[in-house]
Length: 189
Image 1 (cartoon, rainbow, N blue to C red):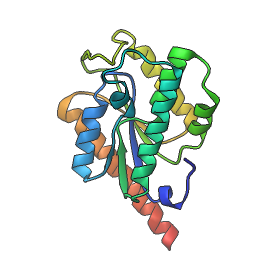
Image 2 (cartoon, rainbow, N blue to C red; image 1 turned 45 degrees about the vertical axis):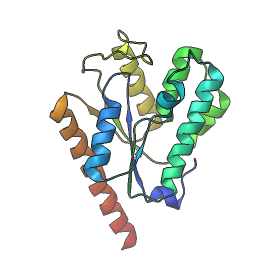
Image 3 (cartoon, rainbow, N blue to C red; image 1 turned 180 degrees about the vertical axis):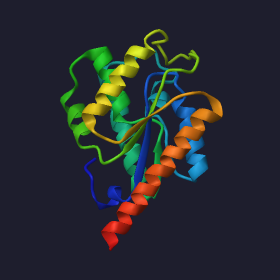
């Protein structure tokens, strides 16, 4: 998904980080707080009820995630919240299979501008059938930090629990929105 005028006008906020860090819960709260559309996690829908997955499944999930983003962007939202994006799929792929698939590498390079909320693994682990790394969250968190630094997209780490976590995220989205508003005003002058 290459950047274009349509995506340049939307503020895209993606939640990212290791498993069981409250991404989905916070994404829903942000979408509600800002009356913004929410792009859900394609992997959860795709994998629920399946016995395992392979490389082709992960690529299918990546394509579904991109398609869901693009469908939402086609409505030209001012703000869009993404429960996850290709960054999570990148880390997942590298952890399971090593070197990135060429298509996935290219798709990552073509992402339009976005802002990330990186969720600290400071919430208690909550098991479910799709999670498999309860004791590896700190190492994975470091991988996300490194990947985000490489990508160069704006990123803020979110920590704490309950209202503290939500309040941090809401304040950051408001700050990004204010920056966006000022930037658009400068361009219009």
